[in-house]
Length: 192
Length: 448
Image 1 (cartoon, chains in turn blue, yellow):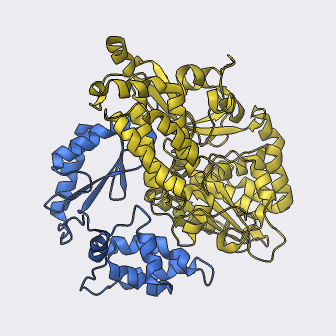
Image 2 (tube, rainbow over the protein chains, first blue to last red):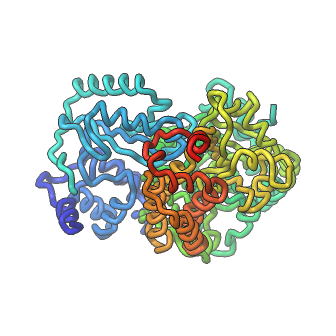
Image 3 (cartoon, rainbow over the protein chains, first blue to last red):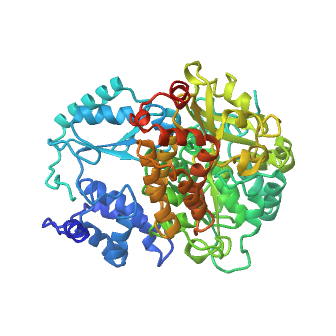
């Protein structure tokens, strides 16, 4: 099983990695913040940008590109990408809904919010809606316990959630998606 | 009204911006320190203030600074820990959101005291908004000549860099944070060597929490001894408490250390009592890693003294009847809460967040989660409760970093104080299978 999963994750995409001039300049600026010979320090900040610009997840060729850029071994990038929750190796929906499920949120109705979202979208933890719009993910403490229940929609926090507020957020996101073109979800199938 | 030190100007409109902050005596500590004090004098002042680490450990800040190896020719680093991830804690986010320049000012004064020319603020990756706020604040301070080369015409130069994490609770542990800052997995390092000797890039390093560093500016302005007059005993000054859970007024409050817990819980100035007029059941006063206390022990110590919000009073009674100040993440449970479910929830958190380096933590957190899950879902066995106690005891003290202890304490303390709830789950499995079952106290009245 483990082998199969690794094989899928490390399957190379045929699209060549291309970052804009502006993005490459951002990468260089980030590298410049750290002392000479310590350019690896820029890895996490660079991966954030690389992930955002390559459609919300890190393809292996993107990781290899970052390894080259930082003059480190590809495995040094893979081990970091697989360690941190925010780096994703699978495609997600256009909107990633990360609902906090840790106790301070849970005792304020966080579990009900998750269930409500799950019902409304017809998907469970870790799944993406067939239209590629929403991925639902239960996550651990987001550090906003006083405004519980909370979730993160991509990078934005949505706080003091109620069912009504969820309805409003979902319809706002849907109309936003109609304006922007929905993201292709060729990796929508689950790994395991 | 308690005295406000960190949040003194919080209500001033526009205090988030450099100009308004400056107009409210902002950056006067930088002027005072850089122009009239030597680095050693700054350290001495912080020592006199009695300031203790606000991230959770409560270690005296001045003493930590004095351990920094200043003889080496290597650069020295100050790293600000803004990886706020302890469940129940959201005070650093609040500070950064509302008064970011207080942190920048503290960073400049502290960096000057420690002789650092490059300082990193490690912010948890989820706080993208806060990263933007800090970068903006750094740019403003730089433009005004408080950062960069030859600050205020002195020969002291400093750059502050805001660095993003990527979602890992373990990176709040200082050596894991340093590993992460070097672009690696957040695996904590074996100590010694301590960061003060060998930290970031093998150079002497101090890692301090956001709130700790934010307090340095006011301490320099008022003088260490004056700060030390606030508070009680060795718990000097003020502390930010982030209150959440089943209370009327969740939020971030600045308290003078020594405030009675009951006043914090029930007065209108702070938590405003339990939501919906329910009874108080339990409190975790310092973030999820510290022991939970039942209502009677959180307001009064076992010896019958009123319990105070101070490092010493909260710890009174040790782990038998006390808890810890921790990070100040104050989680309140009302009478309807199920302590078994909450304990299972936290054990899942620690299992998810264990870095996997040490076997007792990697395996033990998973075992605790599984055993608690089956008890909570009505499949528990009589021997499971003692099994949990035994696993917790075998994790505690047997790992490189304190995450193991942090995972063990909530389980051990919940069983110590709420054993009857765990036993009820084992004895009446059919009554607890529904996660929204009635409170155990009510069920027990009918069925026992």
